[in-house]
Length: 366
Image (tube, rainbow, N blue to C red; front, side, top):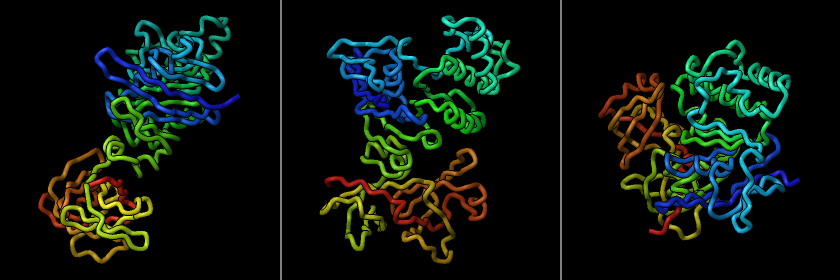
C-alpha cells in the first residue's frame, strides 16, 4: 500500500473566491502531524472539510493511499462515514443535552453495547476524563470540553485525524498547558493528523510539516523550522508573521556573506541562497532573534551591532515587544527581567545585536 495521503484540489465559492490546496502529501505511517497554517480566511478550514468529505471540491483529486476519496473528472466522491476520519471542529460541536459518555459514544451505534462501553472507558481514561462521565458539556471547563471532543474523534479508531484550531477557544494559560498535552496525545495515538492553526508557536510545537496558506493558495510547505525561518517569498514571510521585513539593496558579497543596505543601516547576512547578480532583497528578522544590550556594552560575537532608539514598548504575556529605530524599523522581544535590567523606556538608547544566519534574505527584482 502506498502510505501517503495525496490531495490536489480546488473549491470555488459563488462569490468567486477559490480555495486551492496543491500537492499536499501526508505520510500515513508514524503518526506525523501536518499543519495548515495561515490567517483567518486563508482557506484552512475549507481544505480540512474537503479532506473530511464535508465539502466537495470542484476539481482535482484526493487519494488515501491506494483508495480514491475524490476525483472530479471521474465524478468519484467517497462519503464521510466511509473515509473513517476523526474530525474535531473549532467549536467542538458537543451535544449540550448529552453526558460526556454519550457524547463520546455517539457514532458507535454499529457496535454492541459492551464494546461501546469498553472503548469509551478506555478513551476517557487515556485522556484523563475519568470522574466526568455523567457531566454535560456546560458543566465542563474549556480544556475538558476540548478533551471530550478529541475523545469522540478518536474512540471510533479513525485512520486520519483532522483538528480545526483545537486550542483557539481556550484561555491563554489553558492553551499553553494543553498544547504540550495535545502533542503527547498525538504522539501516543500515532495517527496521521492534519491540524489547522493561525498560531506560529502552536505550529512549531505540534507540527512535523507545515503548509502555509494565503487566500486559498499554498505558498510553501516543509519542516516547521525551515518554513518559519526561511520563507520562500514575501507573501510567505508576511503570512508567517515575521516581525521585521524590510527591502534592501545588496552592496556586495564576499566569502559567503552579503552586505545589505536597509534604509540607512548596513546588515551582514548569509548569501548562500542568493541567485547570482541579484541586487534587491527583503531582509526578514524574527523578533526573538534580536538581542538588546546597553549602548556602551562590550563587543559581542554577533556580526551586526546596530545603535538603536526605543520607540515603543508593548506587553505580550510574559514578554515585551520593543519597537526600535536603528536606521530602519526593527522589532525585538525581550523578557520583563531584561527590560528592567536595561532600564528600557521610550527614548532609551540600546544596541541591537543580530547574527548573520538570523537574517533571511528573499531576493526580488528591483
